[in-house]
Image (tube, rainbow, N blue to C red; front, side, top):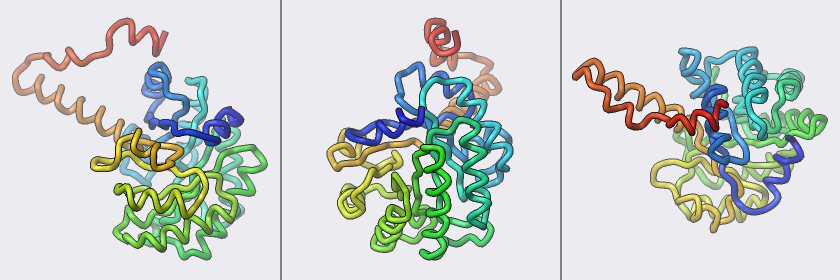
Length: 260
């Protein structure tokens, strides 16, 4: 699985969809996605929590359940790797490797302080994750979180991504970028595989491919779309007592392909 995941990053552009439980993982696999990734917000919702409230044991158990359910590589949204010290980062990587992860991401936002890490701290943390990932042949994605938290300084983002690449990251990712100019600058100036989050208003997947983006992920979008469909179905049942929502259900053939 890890060799397959590395190979996906060698050329071209591929889609990395984000399930939130074993059932959604098997459905996405049946539709033909070459790899999957966990979503911290989607997992949190499935546990009745808000994002950034999932514990490390909960994530490890989730990864083990997903890798047991599917036969394609799984990347793990490991947030800050649940540690402040390099030793703790390595321990998290080891646990996720044992659970079957083919890839892991680490981000530079600290919810405890509500701040982006300093560049020096970010480099140290990525280097610790890279060393641990290398022992397991795991693809490491380093994330610069500036644009998710209102710090829209592209020069700083690029400086961080270049530094994280130099520290050992295999892939870089700055969620929140949405314009062709900004995305193109990252691809050109960082010069390594780049992940882009599919968001409203961003270029289409073919357009991202033309910009040189290697990987396109969905984050929590699929989970929230599914929860939105559940809300709409429940409201129809409560308000009118009708069940037209069933017209969007999976067919028996689709159920057999995904869960048979």
